[in-house]
Image 1 (cartoon, rainbow, N blue to C red):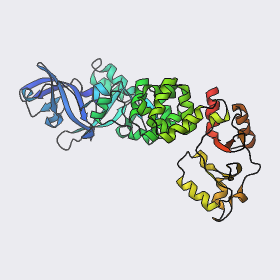
Image 2 (image 1 turned 60 degrees about the horizontal axis):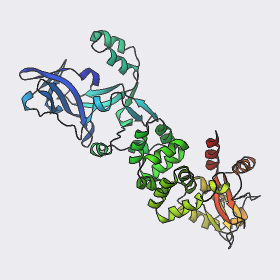
Image 3 (image 1 turned 180 degrees about the vertical axis):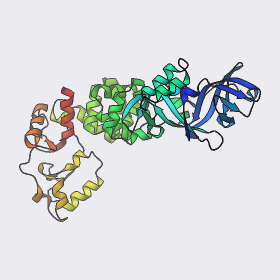
Image 4 (image 1 turned 30 degrees about the horizontal axis):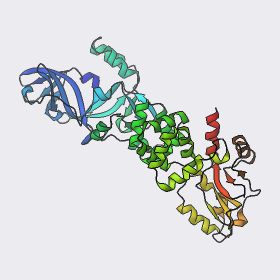
Amino acid sequence: MSNLALTELLGLPVFDAGGQCGRVRELAVAPQEDRARIAVLIVRTKSGDRVMPFSAVNSINGGLRLDSVASAWPIADASEGLFLLARDLLDQQIIDVHGRKVVRVNDVDLYQDTSARPALRVGSVDVGARGAVRRLLKGVVPIAALRALLRQIPEKPIPWEFVDLIETDPARRVKLKISHERLARLHPADIADIVEDLAPDEREAVFETLDEDVAASALEEVEPKVQKAIVESLDSDRAADIVEEMDPDAAADLLGDLAEEHSSQILQEMAPEERDEVSGLLEFKVNTAAGRMNTEYIALPVSATVHDAIEALRGFEGGVEIVSTTYLIDSHGTLAGAVPLAKLVLAPAGTPLLSLTMEPLISCHADTGESEVAELFDKYNLLTLPVVDEHDKLTGVITSDDVISMLRAKM
């Protein structure tokens, strides 16, 4: 195997059977066929730019030698379905999913199999000083001197399989089959950090292609101002799909920050059950316990057993933080007790939940202020805090994550 840099190939002479016929202008991959293999070569000739399959290249040695003639190549009047390495990668921002960051591309490292007919593949992208120096000094200093200098500069490559491309044009995204499957595998907090480093149109492009569930989890981690900007950039139906997957309290906080007209449009596009849940929370003041609570929680009758709680956990689709506590209510919905997850794990299946409740039972009323909520979490080292109405009926639950988000918003 031997390595070549994209910028070393750009501008190289191209020879056909009659001699030099042009110079390399671009190399391209066809992502729908193979994301890494160089499929097409675009050559600048006297009669205009022409495109040819890379399979026509016989050798690469100070130039590219071909087994066809220039007149047989079609004019390069379009690049639909092609990803052009120089145009679409050099100086562009990409997502390094391994390093969990946004980086700028200085060069592209290609490798060729020299044991057979030349075949180039993208190996990695260079995001360090080495690629930048190569480009700046190409043609300025002798090649031998440049290569000697480059050997002294450490490489900073990102393997191609760890690269997520950002394409802001929706139509082109579809044609190039660009998605963000690699990004989607990261933790939502890492996705949020990455998204916050992108330009507004790039953020929109990412959230247009992420799965709704992944997008919702990431959106909950994004700073409120950026969160608002992202949702405002999306169509109402797409925004609704994402907001539906958010925790109801987070969704209500987000919609409460939007203009009333935009918030109403998103609510109209949401499924009835999720819409009613979020609409109910929007009626509460944001700086109260009710404005911060989540209406998805596990509540069982006072007669329930550990077996009943385990079954409820299996079917629960809410957030991870919520399952740390199972609440007990009487026939009127009045809060009667709270059972921590650790006790469920250690107790036999037939154990009554009432025998496992925490003492004292800490709760707050719906109109409790944010500062008092934070004090209760701090004083009692709570993971969750139940919220009750004036009749002590359980209406929602605040999690430690909610408190952290609340405190971050005040920083």
